[in-house]
Length: 386
Image (tube, rainbow, N blue to C red):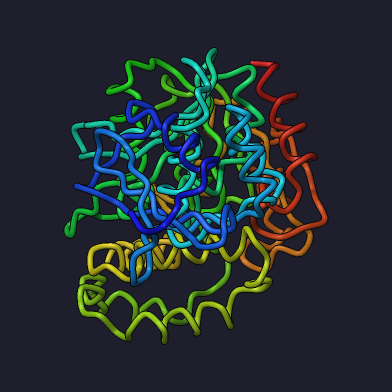
């Protein structure tokens, strides 16, 4: 081979354990940059990993660090995940793939981070998990994936079996075209996953849409829930919804038609999302685009967003009608600067659930990423009571 491959990266790839990271495609190409004069590619085929000179074209995932960091990662079995968490190693394009590769080279033992597909009666659900103890299941928000809970998974894995999932329609989970993609549907999927994992009861943590799903599980399946932690949960609007009549006429399956090429969609998203140049935000945009730029992922996104807007707050099945009947102890975490779920919702929740706990943080809509220390301290304290 004409190109000399960096010894440090060869050592890293030699450690790759395919049982830690279940590859759900025939092969994948990960580019490692900064470990030598030229980038190199790792090719995964499900059975192992091999190192090659970088090919032309964009890889499936890109991992970038300086030479010293790569050397440290090669020496230290936990170095890759430590470097990622400390922002010395960046992962772009496909976080599921990039972080899965790091986990598979870390030799974390039985309780280490691992990725797999779980077959349920509702279809295949992609999960990441680590740790042992009482199970905690984490549910992401609209347009996000399980990797938005990576810091939380790491924070909880010392005391719990921490499980982050891709809800159907997002990330690497099943994306059925005719699914409802509303809170009752997602709740059934969560219960199906618990059944497949042989978990009787679990703590649930949900962010945004995932918080609404966690509440639905608590309302529809109270026997499966221990405690609920809701991070800026999406809640049925109490004000008027002027676009509701028009949205009811729009079929979300229109998302099967590609509205614009990737560069156009990406440019729009980066203009709309605050802090798009920050590392976690940029990675989150990558994860959103990874699903949204597929026909099924786009249809799922439209359907879920439509259901959030159209949800009736009152009536027999309305959220605010049913919320006072929630049995599980609950913690609500709010962001003072959250423009999607305004802090004013806290007063409505307190009236519906007088025994609920509340934490107000200075950030916005994703507290586990914006204020990880305070969020994770509150979660550990709250869950320990159960």
